[in-house]
Amino acid sequence: MRPTFSVQALLMLLAFVSALLIAVVAGVLSHSNGVRAAGAVLYGGGAFIAWMTLCVSVLTALGLLGGAGGAGRDD
Image 1 (cartoon, one colour):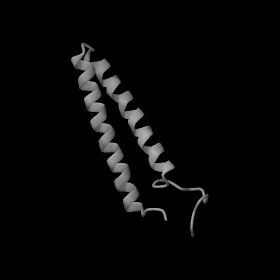
Image 2: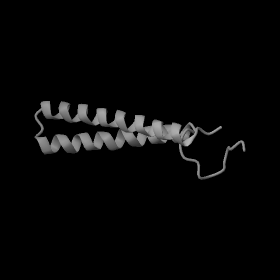
Image 3: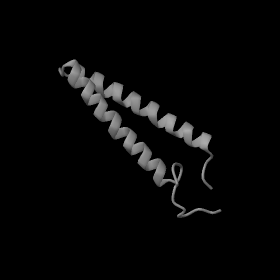
């Protein structure tokens, strides 16, 4: 059984907020390590993209997101 749209939206919001937190922490840590502000922003952006990709991939693999295809559907 696939979760409803509202549950999927909440899961995506949770993935977004966690990726934002990871990006801020990565940016601050890289800036405190001597990287200039622009480099720290780029580092944080890379961390955001990597974590968001991982979250969406895991949620899709677990069957909690997406599903344009009909494989594995019960209905």
